[in-house]
Image (cartoon, rainbow, N blue to C red; front, side):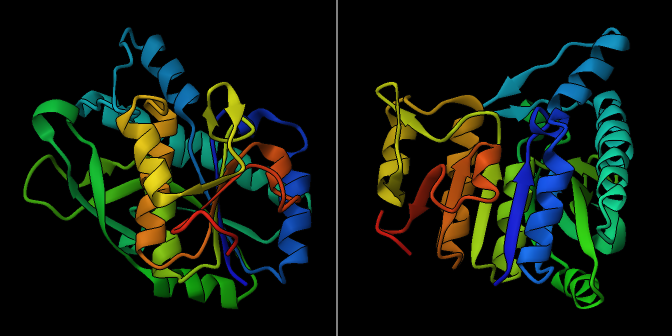
Length: 254
């Protein structure tokens, strides 16, 4: 069983994260790929440089100057901090970004509106299999290589989108999107099972907005790409398969 886990920036501040990931890595015979975000760290860097954060549909508007800060925060400090914590727990973690060996090749989404923001075109799955077969845990920053003809060599890809594309490329059994909320909510209550149609309805009705809408769109892309199950939840979902919102094509158990 192969699982792709994406952890949001706020979750990375939990002191138990590395220990829990180490337990999952061992329990899954080390067939795990980790993608991380770090939006709060990017925003803090922007503020330090007198810049402001702007989002459109859950995606960060990224200017050329912002792009350098995104790379510093995600591929630099956030990635290496997480790798160091995992290595301390005995995990053979290797930190890479989407730029390394063109792991994530992307093209600009909408330069006029979003700037240096990309959408994934392909994933170098052979690199990940090489690491997995060698007994390593890939820890991936979603900063990606631009294969388009504009905006320079690097693009800021949303972490949920990157994780979904990686899950599809690896034919993963599950994609788990871990954030600081227990799951997808509707009417103030956590939804435990959701179909692709139901996810689209939550987005179109405005029930799921911002970051949650981005997560649902990533979940839909993963499911339509062949991943049988996506879960959205908080840290408790890492080791408890019953936690969070499970999303499948039909909304039934996978």
